Length: 259
Image (tube, rainbow, N blue to C red; front, side, top):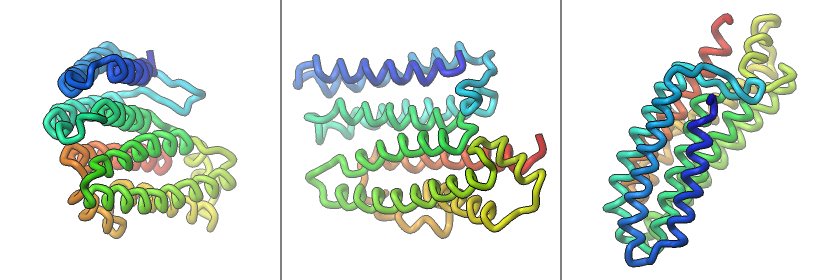
């Protein structure tokens, strides 16, 4: 039950893939939009069924608590609005409309993983799953030079931030002997702050700062927002920023406050 929403997301991605393959091109634009909207409603039903569930999974890299529950609702509402916007925007690239909805759902899967991540490695996986989907969607309108430029700039800046993040994770792993938030909390509680730990925390914060466009890591935002399709800008400005800020809040709350 703890990972029911994520399993449902994986299942609906397969449904979207099957629908895209089997639907005639003339009907694909309307059908895929309706199928994506139905998928968000089905996922909302799964999350409502999970409302009384509290638990951990993957020993315990993944946690489902009230914090994750609230943010997953926010992600689903954001995804539903983006799907409705995409039904209008995808008319300009109707030949690849199915892939666009697949990327929306894969970004949603990454955000939901982030909402429950209590380990730096799972946080990195969820963050990259979400941002790789956004890289492709930012450059989706291949006939628009601004869209291509937006995707390239977002890819370059996002890759740099990912490098900062994973290097910080490696330093913290060397200092704490693990990548879980609990291991980092124990490290800070039992020993004074060392240079390795401080550098690791700084690099992780810098990596997350790029993802949420926090000052001074926000210089990529104007160009990407100008060139990306409107539904992608909505997902970038609301969904991805909310996911990054939520990850930062969980990390700081778990690591810096006593158990």
